[in-house]
Image 1 (cartoon, rainbow, N blue to C red):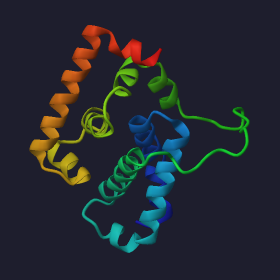
Image 2: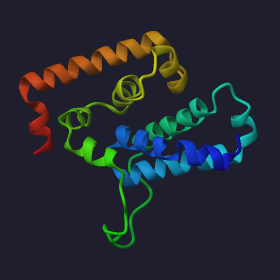
Image 3: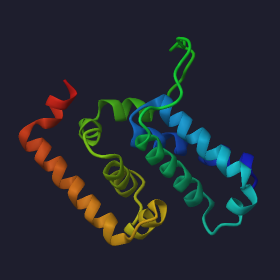
Image 4: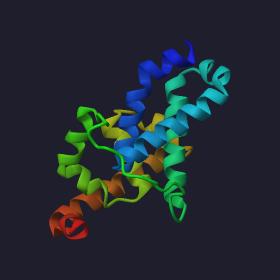
Length: 164
């Protein structure tokens, strides 16, 4: 598979993953672009991997986690963009209107990534562990804590309080 074919086949999926973990469409595009740029630099290695998409997905997730560790995101917009010029896909509308997304925003970055990879990407614990570079038991523990936090937030309505 050539790089251009990969981008055509999986580019929008990477943007959706970026949006689901970050909650921001522009940051999602940045994450996908960074992941694809890094994959392009070592495309021979990526192409020869057992699962090239797994490799690129890991790049995207690692970049997101790195961004959340930094004190501030280094890029700042310099001009207003005409919103009619941009055409977001339907996943943006669905995720924006979903109460689950608002609840996910209250979780830590790692908890959010684990739940997104597990429930939105439908990956098993071993694959999530490979993407994050941790043990499968850590994936299960993180998911358990995240789900408990979501249940607790729902009971106490903390989700609505944190967003107002």
